[in-house]
Figure 1 (cartoon, rainbow, N blue to C red):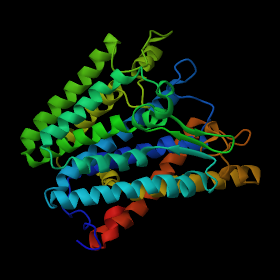
Figure 2 (cartoon, rainbow, N blue to C red):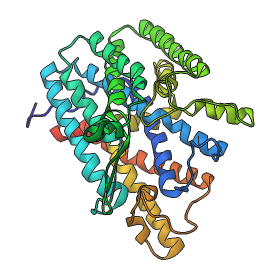
Figure 3 (cartoon, rainbow, N blue to C red):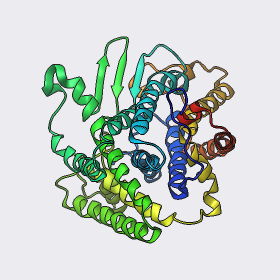
Figure 4 (cartoon, rainbow, N blue to C red):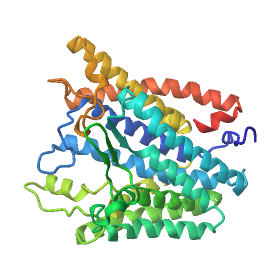
Length: 397
C-alpha cells in the first residue's frame, strides 16, 4: 500500500462479473446517446404517449444502475480476500469521496454540459454510488449476513415511506430528497439543483451485493444452484407482486388499448427512487445472467469483458465522447454549436436542442454502436495499462 491507498485489484478476476458489468456499461451508453440526440420532450415511460421501440429502448437500460450497484457490493466483499477490513474501509471511503467529486465537478461540468456556470445541476448515479461505498465501509465490521439483511430490509420496506413527501417535512425536506424521494434541492431564478438518485434504496442494493460476493467463495456448482434459485425467485416475485398491484411500486399498471401496451404498463416500474418491483424486475434476471456467464466467456462478449474490467474509465470517457459527436453533428447541420454548451432548464438537460435537432431512433442506435466500438479500443488500451502497472492512482479509475 502506498500513498494511503490500496494497490489495484488482483489480476485474478471473476469473468462473469466483469462480463455482466461490461454489458450494462454498453447499454448505459444507449440511454445517454438518446439524451443527446433524441427528443428531450418525449417521455419514454409515459404509457399514454410513448411508442413501443422508444419504451423498450429506455426499459432495457433500466438494468444498468441496479446491476452496477449490486456488483459494486460484490466486488467489495471479494476485496476482503486480499485486503484487511481496515484497508478496505479506507479504500471505500476515499473512492466514495472521489466519485462524489467526480459527479459534482468533473462529469457535471466537463462531461455533460461543457460549462462552469452550474445553472442546471442534476445529481445522479456517481453521487449515490460514492455514498453507498462510504456507507458500506461503515458496516464492514458487521457479519455479512447482518449487512445483507439490512440491505434486503431497505429494498423491501422503503416503499412504505412513499406517502411521506419532502414538502411535509418543512426545513428537513431536502434531507428527505437526499434519502428517499428525488426532487429539487435548490430552485432560484439563477440556479437549479435536482437530486435524481436518493440514497436509501441504492445503498440497500450495494449491501445486498456485498452478501452476493460471498457466493464466489463457494464451489461453482453450489453457487450456480443458488443463483438459479434466487434469480427465478426474484423474477417470479416480481410477476406475482406486480399482478397483485397493491404494494412495491407507486405506479399501478392498468389494462391498455392493446396487449402490448398493457405489457408496457406492467413493466413500467418506478426508477426514481428504485421501487421494490423495479429492483425485483432487474436483479432477478441479473442473477440468472451471472449463472449463465459462469465458465468460458463467449467470443461475442469478449469486448464486454474488456470494458467490464475498467468500468469507471469507460464511464468517464463515454459522456464527453457522445457530447463531442453531438457538437460535430450540430456544426455540420447548423453551422453553429452554441446549443451544445447551453442548458438553462431541467427540460433542456444536457443541451439546448436547436429546432429540428432530434434524430430518428435507428440513427441513435447507429451512433450508440459507434460510441461502443470507439470506447472498446480505449478501454482495451487502459486495461493493459492497469495489468502492467501498479501505480496507486490506477485503483481509482
